[in-house]
Length: 86
Image (cartoon, rainbow, N blue to C red; front, side, top):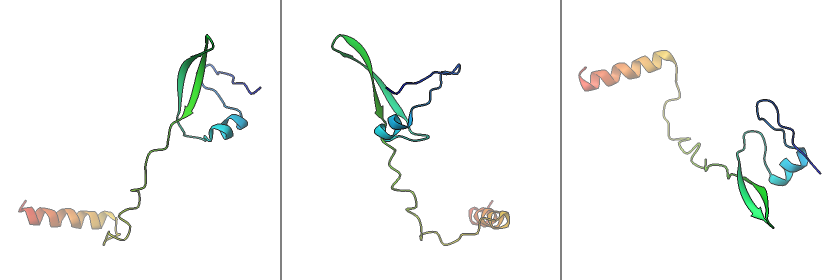
């Protein structure tokens, strides 16, 4: 039976087979929920679904300028100030 050992910092390393069964990896979040089953307190581990990141990259092809140099940024700020009359 797989087991966990808790470190002095309350950290634990999950056995490979447990991670594979839960389909979790580094950086994933696992919710821990207490339950009573047959009069015994048990803990249910439930992987939290990954946040929806489908919007990432949604502006690809929409951006006209790809110059992020400091000179380009300064020109953009100066143009904005001229436009606002600052």
